Amino acid sequence: MTLTVPAEQIDWRTKGMWRPGPAISLDEFAAGRPSLFGGEFTWPLMVAGQAAIAHNIDTLARFCARHGLEFAPHGKTTMAPSLFAAQLRAGATAISVATANQALACRRMGVPSVLLANELLDVGPLRWAAEQVEQGFGFLCFADSVAGVRAMAEAVASVPGERPLRVLAELGHPGGRTGCRSVAELTEVARAVTGASRLELAGVAAYEGGLPDVAAAGRYLDEVRAAVHELAARGLLAEEVIVTAGGSKYFDAVADRLAGSWLPGHRLRTILRSGAYISHDDGIYREWTPFRRIPGEGSLKAALEVWAQVTSTPEDGLAIVGLGKREVSYDEGLPLPRRVRALDGTLRPAAGLRVRSVNDHHAYVEVEAGAEVAPGELICFGISHPCTAFDKWQVIPVVADDYTVVDLIRTYF
View 1: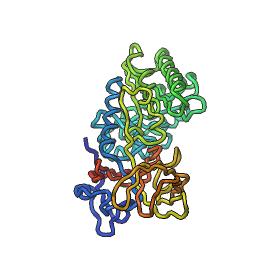
View 2: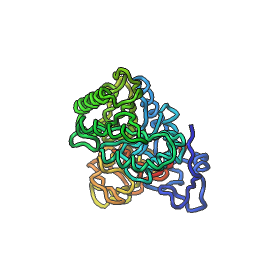
View 3: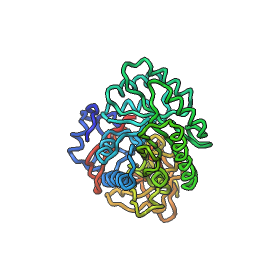
View 4: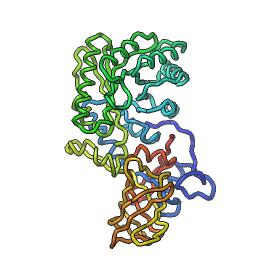
């Protein structure tokens, strides 16, 4: 599957690319198969490993197929049409998003179905969504308040057509993000949706990713399952019922608690929404991935690297590297040195190096006794939390194992 995006070019405005001359299209640039270290790029620069991305997409697709889960990977991680297309080709049925702008971007790219994992309240986007649904666009959004349902119903009431806006009533948990805090409240929201003329209750939504451990996630998902049974018993659910959950920390618990045919008299569709898996990381998701608990189900590979140059070694034990908050994620852990590329092009492990802190454009790297780095050398860093890494780069080179650039990812945040 391919998606439609505007023709893009690389020029002096493209971060990480060294292009003092005329602009060039992304396709033409990638067709030249330049080396990452051949002078076409400048530092810092984030790259994605071709093999790791392909491996991760295939691994989650197989996981979902084995467990009978539909997959709507969260697009907010990458906002990259080339990656959306690869996920859809691998079996994803939709792309999840967090905002109305992201839903609009997906629609313009040609994504056939979008799951907006939030309550949509703005009148303009609501009317747009209803208009697109009338044209055959697959669209789902959440609701967690009667007031929100009322806002939705009022916004779409005047949109010409007959197809309803499909809504998922969201059950949250105490201290969590969004979602009703009780089954009684969820029932009120579900009743409000079913009572609105241009809305349709499609099922129940949940998000377990903010819970502290897999046991807590399991208990919450059991509550979600019980809530779905309660809505069904009250006659609020249609023959087809969607239940959706799933970040990248506990998708094993989602498969265990919500997959399968456990709602008699209804055709159940369980949709997983994990997103960060596509690139994985060397930080929080390396520690939290469910595949550490279920190694027989597969594994994920860290696909993102940020290459940056040592600019100064002003004192013993300290190196300053041209890498900062504008280039790398730092909200869930600082970048992790992986390798050093010497001035002669040889690679060595980044043993004895640790990032102490980052400024806007500089990283303070502690250098242990016995370790050495020199100005001009390049350090390859792994990252923690890809969701705040992709948005810092408009264009991300995709590299083969030998660091030949084979493609370019264009992001649209």
